[in-house]
Amino acid sequence: MDKYDVSYDQYCYDNSSVLKNKLNINDIYGFEKAERDITSITILRVSYSPPPYNIYYFKLLHKAIFSEIFDWAGEIRTVDISKNNTRFCNVNRIEPEAEKLFSQLENEQWLIGLEKGSCIQSGEHHVI
Picture 1 (tube, helix red, strand yellow):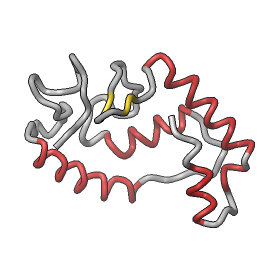
Picture 2 (cartoon, rainbow, N blue to C red; picture 1 turned 45 degrees about the vertical axis):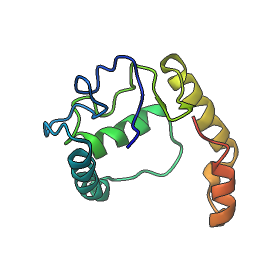
Picture 3 (tube, rainbow, N blue to C red; picture 1 turned 135 degrees about the vertical axis):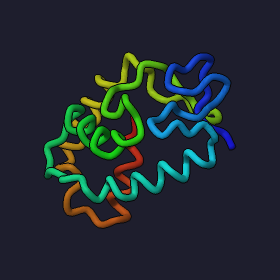
Picture 4 (cartoon, rainbow, N blue to C red; picture 1 turned 45 degrees about the horizontal axis):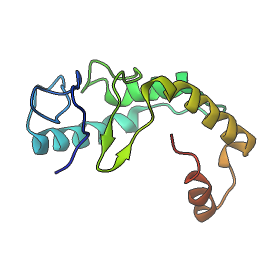
């Protein structure tokens, strides 16, 4: 199973692609199951707000959903990561790119009222 590739990742256990977690689970399959089980519950507890959205709000959402698993929930990552052949946004660009994304979504009325297919199609262009 391929996970995030990094040369050194302070977020992962040594010699592992498993994220350090409050559960102290360091095998990938056990961790992924625990993460799914916990987040399927915590995501239901979140009080979602209507737009407008910003990076601060998304950090709050991340913390609400993942704080039972990670000490760093709700914080912007500090290492560059990739998965397979896809590099994710450089750490120095996450906040500026996120704000650009939120601005674009605001210009599109947060995709409110779009049919599912149109929303998905529009959403494809809004990935950081």
